[in-house]
Structures are given as C-alpha cells and as structure tokens.
Image 1 (cartoon, helix red, strand yellow):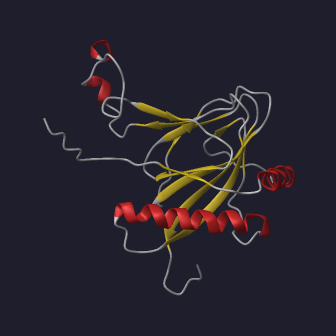
Image 2 (cartoon, one colour):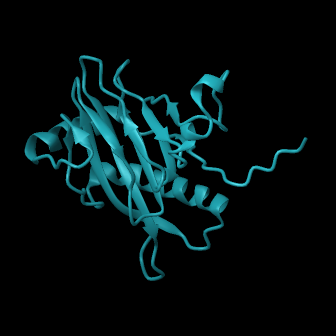
Length: 196
C-alpha cells in the first residue's frame, strides 16, 4: 500500500541563541510599566503590540525574520515575509491561554524566553475538529498524526515555533510557581520599498 498524504500542516522548530536573561528583564520591566490587554490570556499578562524598533528586540527580530523566510519556501510563497506585530506573554502561576488562531496573517509563532518546569506546553488542534464523530475513541488503539484531535509540543528556553496562522492552539495552565515568558510574532508580506 502507498499512502498519499494530501494535506499536511507543518510546525517548524528553530533553536535560537538569544540573551534570555536580558529579554526576561525587558519583559518584566515592560509589564510593570504597561497595562495588559486581554485577548487569549486567562490570568496572565499580554502586552499591546510592541514597537519593532525597540533596541532590546532587534536581535530576536532579525533571527525570526530569517526563520519565517526559510519556512515560506515550503509553502511556495513567492514573496519575502517580515514581522507584522509582536507582543509579550507572561503567564503567571495558574494562568493559561485559551484556544485561538491568528487571523489576517500568514505565519504565527512563539519564542520562549523563560519556561520553568510544568509551566505549560503549547497544544495544537486538528483542523478537522469533527474527527471523533468519524473515528471513535473506543476503536482507537493509539494516536498518531492521522487520528489525533490535538498535538502537544514541549516548550523550552530559546525555542522558536512557527506555524500556519490558521492552526488553532492554546497554552496549558502554568502549574509552576514561577512566571512563564514568551514572545508571539505574526508575519506579513514585505513590500518592495520596505527595509528588511
């Protein structure tokens, strides 16, 4: 038998080399001086969109743009990508992020600044959210890429996950006693007269 895989959803994992201590300090200071917005976060802090020219973010900005453009080749996107917006997430103990996607952009992503043990992984949802109406749990002997309704990826410091923005996901509850810090980034097409 030959399996023809007609629809695939990739999640790209990159390991960056950012100064995590400096980014964590910046994140905490920013949260102290700027109010939270409440979009997908439940109990934690989420910043407004950050100014992409902030000096503390320039190394991350440059590294992540390279990652986005490496992944776009897998989708045969013929245009270069750049960052559309970027924001901070600080998940305090017992906080989490509810299921959501990222409309009006091409790739979404998350970079992990500080991930204590048991502070919550990222969980992706099968685009066919009706799968259990057809493949009932009582028939299933194990789960893999063909029959799972969710897929959990572990998060680690300096890891950068990039995924199609339509892919629904959530962040598990922070069951540690420390803050979990990440930076989310969305992409868009870079215009011809725009600097890289």
